[in-house]
Length: 354
Image (cartoon, rainbow, N blue to C red; front, side, top):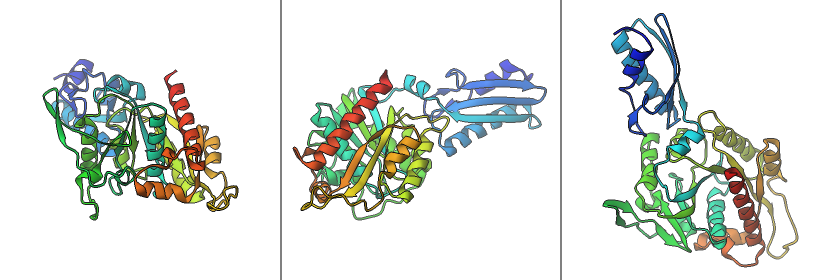
């Protein structure tokens, strides 16, 4: 076969994009194709920007082209994640969910699950229909915070297909990897296996009509995050951090990850957890144990919205352990803080739509 643009596209038309189930040419995923003598330069987009997914696509392109045109040709293939607008247009799963928002943190132990559960509860109080996917595969906390640890999801038939029915409590729908594992045993899975398990919580579940589906991500910025956040096109991400410098450094990396080329998930805002300590008997006192305004200053410095601060109050921990998020406590200091964060959250999401 003669080496020219038409013949190269014909060969590339045999390569299937694994998530979108069609060939990369008909999906218009091949760009910047330049052929000079025995050199081929091109860019290919994939729906999953994780390193292993991009590597597999690059290997598939090189293998197929050299198989047809000979091993002596030189190939420069750049593989990128789909731009956000393209992912939005290709969204085929969860069509009845209006907003899909990830809650992330660069560092563990900063209260990400606490913030997720209270934002969900605050949204419910505002009249929204809400669900949570607990994707923190190594430490699923959401079942505890909604008092559904002992529950096990059932299967239901939807349009001839068997789907997982989320567990519902306090009006919030919940699915967690914790429902399918032994709570006392460690979950030791490799990245691709973990990502596949998480994918099923979206694609094989009967979420129905929701205004918000929140995803409680694992801490960190690893390969599993890239796979996971690309399972569905995210509308945005909230970053949770304490004011402590160690946590801020990880939060900064988290923000930069979501700003990466090929991911570009909008940052809805930053929440500062454990902003100060207030003892129950001295509600007017503030003790800045982990530093002052660290996450707030980080948001301003990186030009991303700041959603609010959550004080370190004993009742937050007690509410989480009891399985009823603190935001449901009426007219308390902590519920007022979470209500303010939720109002700012909704405002930022709506701004992204306009």
